[in-house]
Image (cartoon, rainbow, N blue to C red; front, top):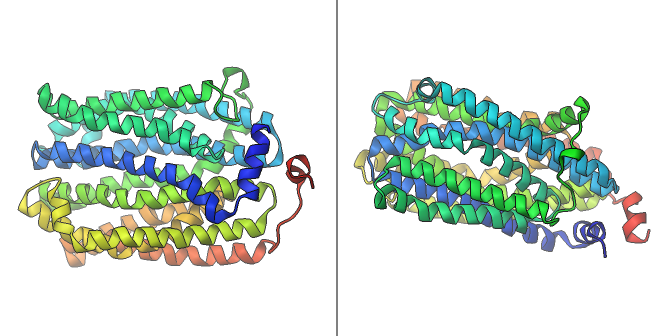
Length: 460
């Protein structure tokens, strides 16, 4: 049986209750381990002081810039690759993959060089105070050096996922995560490099992870082929990738802008407030990574079945993903709500940081159970090529709602307004997504339809 036939059997014939968890579990594990090594960075850097802890939150905005371009090209190509494979067009899939990958690398190198030349102003823009700046400059240097590896990994990871090969992506990401966990204490304390050790460990692990993912592709573990010869010079191909991936660019760029806004909003309350919100942000990202992983398990099912005109199956997969996500995030949120202080204290044993962080974590855990609906909605529209709806939804959580609440609520509630801003944004985002999904479900046929892919591989 060919790879294409195997993919058809997996994505069209396997019950969604079995398929989505099977695709999602490797992605959830890789996402959580990626988040864990971010938390490990926060844990070890926290031992250097409150200002060093805050620097991690400042530099997070820089990472989001690279992720924005990586996810744009990876999601933009990946969703179209899955649809093209669902239509039986292998050549188009190769063209999309190669174009996205090589263009993403060029973009990342240009962005990295520009940011390195303006490192100090960049760190101040991101929210560094005078006491945070020395730490953020040192850590940020290594994050910028590792930018191309991060971007390339984002593209490779997403293409593998959309082909239904999440296990391959997991191997690369998990290996990098484990190496970073080992490297942090050795380089930071064993060799006495301090925060430079944390940054160097992250950079090394990123490049090793990138190398493993490349090996997976060149050893022909994927259906789509990566080659300079397959790269298209047609601007329309690049524009189509960017158009479909635009929601990811918006989402990640707004994450960066939101991080900057958060740091500046917290600045009047001192380094402890910046550190506390940075720590809570990473904890909530860890919780949310379970939903992102589950949603990424849903995306190839969504894209392929939409291309194959299996509309009833798409509908069933959507609601299964939402329900599963609410159950998983609900369990994690309860734990975070009940034990906020011990969790925050793991990363920085500063009474002021723990006090601010505990309140913020409880607020965010209240609304985290609403994320599954908005995340799955956004991923569905993006995976099926409905970029306008997906772009608008991507703007909601970290942009249209979160940034204004960060600016407005502190005027009336002070520090409490900063602590609860993300909760308010999550609630408003979910409520806004409901009518979009309801309209899509009304407009989409209720039944599966026979398509060309069925005649090729299904015997129809």
